[in-house]
Image (cartoon, rainbow, N blue to C red; front, top):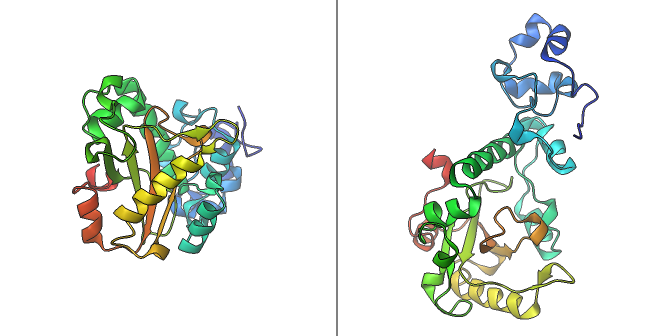
Length: 256
């Protein structure tokens, strides 16, 4: 497994020997003083919760995730609205990332969901979208793309990317498919035009155009590949509109 620190495999007893009594009194926000000596799975974690072995949900991570997990939260800079617009306009969706401690919580949560529901798709369909018990039949569309409202559900992204807090991150889930071009791993022109039209009618009618962006993850980046969805980010929207469009959905952090 890839590790980003030269001491990432050191046992806790070895690390303990490198920390002074003053270190032990530090809050986990101050890990920058010695985070270079910590395995990535210990960064941003209170010392009372340290483990000698990497938790199973953090094993076999991508280099990008390991770099993020290795970063103390206070050294992470949230992406602002101008950066969000640049990322989405250039389709460099891979440049989005989560706040390091939130990425850790996300990976742990996803592992828990997979263990309890057998698949993330079943959990999303049953618990978040209310479309049945999570079977394939439950997500059979009534009509074609964007034809019927019952084939669409807009909710908060439970684990939003690490963007400025005045940016609202929503997900539009659909029972119908949005066609990808297999040669580019991107939307076909007709599918992109259909989404553009929907976003224009649904969001830009209530939020200024310059405060709305949308994107659809490449297949390789999808965390829930079994259900079609795309993302919408709103910059400083009227929260009454957000409550209306999400039918009163509540962000995960408020439900835990």
